[in-house]
Every structure is written in structure tokens, then in C-alpha cells.
Image 1 (cartoon, rainbow, N blue to C red):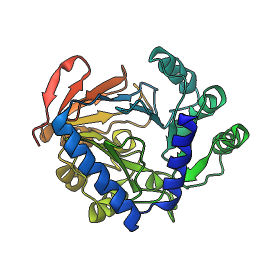
Image 2: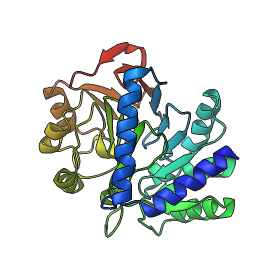
Image 3: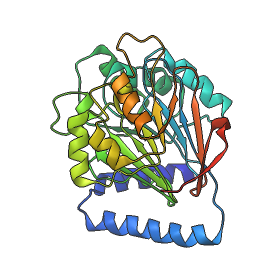
Length: 300
């Protein structure tokens, strides 16, 4: 019953909150105030972020300090079973939230078997519709399972953990192209900031820069490292320590593009790819652990 009440509360909050609402601002101020006080008094659990190896596609699993789970995209269809097995290995038999960043097959295809086989409490979507068979199958499966389905708003916060800020920096409202409709998320736990770009392009990056603080310690690079994303201007503002490239080996698109890799290297950013393995990150809000690389201080 506690889990059901939590999801009902989350749905209610998401339906009511927007960037300009006073209630949303008060809510987030209370989170940051509470988090600041408690971080000084005690050590919280870790937030775990897994950039999953799904071939040419995107899938990111986040386990919050309070145990809530969020899966952002599911890669192509064939990755669905791989992700389910990965969840089982991690002891996860239920997803609190699925976030579908946009309706491209390499992002929502794997969500089809996941929704069919695993309990899911809530699906958050960009609001961008699409005419593909994959998209309609994805939507129909959600409807058949009776899973609440909400289109997020730009600027909205997703209140899954009182000590973690999750904000939507872009959605699919009034967007013509799938990639520019990508949900972009900024996630903050203590001093650790993550920026997850979906397939957002340079035009979307420029719009985000006008409205939001994009600085992050970890950047999930937009559109698998395509030349259509990650401009020099944007990268300068984000100023990450680590960059994650989600792509499949020998893909036909030339991802990641050498111009993007060059920009990352020129700024001294540590680059990790999902082409060979899942990239695992943990943070206690003070430090970041990158897989077997060890503890790294957050200095920025």
C-alpha cells in the first residue's frame, strides 16, 4: 500500500507542477533545504546510475538513495530482454518510473517487452507522437497494462526522492522532429550533477541554455555522439568531468562522430562508451565512483 500511495502522490504532483507554479518552487526549496541540513548530519545511501550496453541505442537505469528505480529509455527491441535480465541480476523486480525520451525505435523498442513482462508504476513521456508500428505497440502495451501515462512539462520536477532533484529541461511540446522533442533531464544529488541529453540536437541545446543552468559533472552526450549535438558552446557551459557515449560498435551512422570526440578530449573530459560494457556510476553526493576507476572528488 505504501508503494501505491507514493505513486498516486507522484502522479498528482506531476499533473499539478510546472516551472512557473509557486507550489513547485516551494516544493523544490523544501527539498534542497532538507537535503542540505541532512547532508551535514549524516551519510545517505548512494545513487546508482547505469548506462546500459544495449547496442545502438539508449537505456539508463537509476536507483535513487531511497530505493526508487527509474529506467530512461530501453534501447532497440532486442535490448528489452537484456535489460530485464540486468534488472533481475540487480535484484530489481519492479520499476517505479519509466521515462521515454522520444519515440525513436532505438529508445522505445526495448520498452515493449519490459512493459509486457515487468511491473511498472508510471510512464513519463515527451508528448511527441509518431506513426511507427513500434510507437503504437509501445503505447498499446502501456494502455493494456493500465499503467499511468503522463506527458511531462518543460521545467517540471519529478519528485521521486526528497534528496534528489530531477528536472525536465526539454519535452516534445510543439516540436516537429523526434530528436528535438527528446526529454532532457538534469539530476542533482548533493554536489553531484548529471545531465542526460537523450537525442537532443544543437538547436535544442541552444534553447536549453537560454533557460537553465546546465553545469554537470556527468554528461550523457546527446544523440550517441552525433555531429548534430554537443556544440562547443554547449560543452563549455556544461563543463563536465565525465562524458558517456551510448552507441553500438560498428554502427552504420558513424557514432560517435570524431568532431564530438575531439571536442571532449580537447577539454580534458574523461570519456566512457557503452559499446563494450555497461558504464556503472555511484555517488554519495560528495564523490563519484566510475566503475573500477575508484573514488573521484567533485571539485567543480
